[in-house]
Image 1: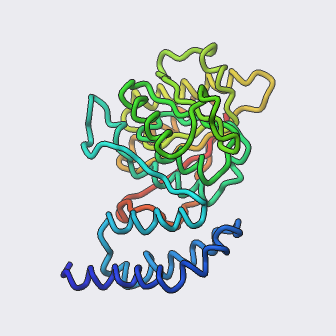
Image 2: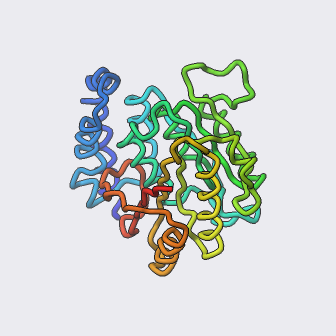
Image 3: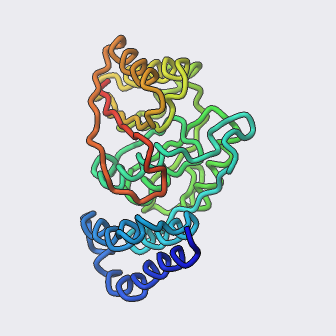
Length: 286
């Protein structure tokens, strides 16, 4: 794209900020409806000029971060790796389905308000941080098997002004946040019973047959931990890269008696992930 086209797009966004954001601050603070945010997006990042000549990803992140700050009183700051594989894991990168799930959560906060949420395979933590800031859960448990990821997760939690459970000086208005080491293959009922989640989420964890089998197994054990309580609601988001992998997931769910239904595709795009990617999310009934 020519430099003048890119500059024109950024000027459009800057002009919108200058003319309208100041007057919209009060409305954004008071509005519980996502319609206002959609209207802003239509006039900025989804404006025909921006669609035809998109601004740089860096500028888009800065603009959207400021918009989130105006609407929620805070923004999400993330430390992550730019390498796909780092320290022997892919979990230090924010994958596209994590962005997709975060958007869905922001559109559907009622699924998380005043509830205990367990995230499986949290990675860099963007989805969970967005939910903690925008959806008012009672408690949020980030989990991952890799010690390097857990270290980064703790840093990202603190970087965003949230307190870990052990911090007695934490903000009482914020959710109770825990970072837990959880290996799906070795976690037994006695460990999982400590979590007692109302909602379980996962994003981009269907990357190989072994992971799918492990995921379904840990979901079954989580359901068993609830004893006489209702089994947790489960949402799994993923990028459809290989239809055979998706088919294996639904086959394994059926084999273990787990019912599922696809969530309606949402077109709100707060985060810059690839337009060409096919995203999907399943709601599971354990």
